[in-house]
Image: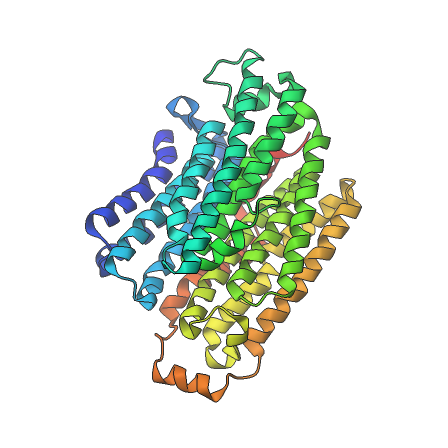
Length: 495
């Protein structure tokens, strides 16, 4: 049973990829195969979460695959966002009039991407985690360039170059960590096993470990969109197809921060909490500041959502720097809430783009009057991202603020939330102009009437509605997942 629970999250998306490779993307026959496999993935994630909650960590393949409460919590997020993205993909590709060949490759690459993220959170070895995150770079580069326009290809190359450099930095950090572990007497099979490293962290050489941790955090932090190697994020997220942008923002960024959390669980007992706290504080505040400034003058609504992702990742990095159990629990809840809300926002932005054939904020006006269902769902997603109750982000941001106040980082927390307020105002102003601005000029109305896009129906809205219900449910109660969240937080929190 344990073997099946750990292998299914990898095998299911790979099966869907094989279906698309063999049969292509042919209407309902195969287009919904991804929805079926990700629904099974979600069921497996819930079962695995229940198993680790009651039995504790489980592993197979000699420890190469391992799940504890933190892994299970992350897998739940991967499965939920993947289900919404795959659910929305058939309607998205139909609206784009995507060719059969490109749709086939989209289906293959999308599910390889999901499989790589599942491997990353279930790998029991830091080497496997690194390989899986590197695999996401290779696969998503082709997805970012899906439209084959000049800007899309430029964004894909930028993504590959920056993230490859970042992951090479992380690799060097893991090599040094392996060196330090081997000098404690650990054999080659255990030297990168994160459970073993956490237990033997106090034996690691502090000088080597300090360099290793710094390199690993900067490298993995780049994949999460943190300064200094952040420049790929707004380009890649704005050019990728909307379901891919949803997966990248809602899951890929948190998976990269999951790698940082695993490193933190080793660094704190090895070096004390001060070193990594300082590094994460610098990266968090710098990322928040840059995102807030760039959001003020933003003119592209997809790039606005991308910079919003940077803002939220900066806030999560702040919570990781605080490091108490309350802070870690809040950041894990924030990851889940942000993932669902940002998925809805990006999926909504895709439908807006199909309607207006422009991603410029100035070209979208009076959306609430012309497309009330789409405007309502997009607006609710933005409100959730801004932290309005009952969204989960309201509870998580409140938890981060309380943890910062009680954890001795009052000034850093106050500065961070001041920047969050700036970002809040900028996003609210831009979204307000899109939804409630003056109606478009008569020429635009005539152009839309002469070549009207496909209507946004209730069927197309269902993934967005499901995502919003999930965000609200997490904000009201965690239900059976409360114990899982607190156990996951205790794995990372500084003692």
